Length: 354
Image (cartoon, rainbow, N blue to C red; front, side):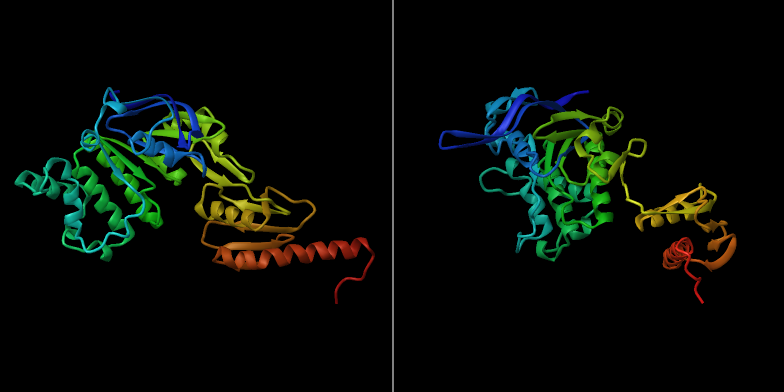
């Protein structure tokens, strides 16, 4: 695989009055052409610092960065503008400019002193709007666009810059869930179609694990590991970097699961492969109830026959027959508590309820 950026024993951080503040040290990795690579890590891991260092916004404290086979320090800012384009998170302050004007700024490395767009420049801009799928936004003012539309405009601007490398800092921040997925899929498609190295930092861990070609996991103490989401899952690196109490990682699905604490058990019968069974199980766990095969000490049970109903039984006698999990939850806890109280009263030799 052809590489666009390589780093070796890189140390990132800041210099202030002769002192160094090290954020990350001894990082070694590479970005491949035609791939979407996601930089993941907890808050404070140094993701934004690494991103700024790689694109030349701040100097490295130690180590080496090579861009397209040449040391980063050998490039002028004008040279870098033809190799790396950058999309930052907050673009909501752009005013009094149309989307076309903003995308046109991406052509500035090629337009000369006066910044006049040639016919070639205009053709590139038009293609960028088409690639990103926002041709209908060309004449819209930036302040009238949604966060997702603004981000797409900035990505079109980065593509118009015609660089082999695109860096994005939290491109899915402020977006709703469907827009996050669309944005990640768009970036993956652009990396493949245009043969670019697209590198982004994100907190959307599960989206990255499902869509990215490569993942960089960064942590101050654990350092940097890289690989495909699948390899990092198999090797246990994702768990090592992100597992916390109450959270478990499903290696097969590359997703995290919440582990609920349960205080009660209830017998539940039905077809475990059915969606109704699985979601009912999830709802019970969330409410502190562990579904099991049988509960000898408790006559309360649930049946899910697969006909759209949820049935609550006591000693195999049906108490309730409902069509929504919500209604089942409203009835099951009182039923279990009533049985527990009755058991306590019986063991204490108290009279049953009237």
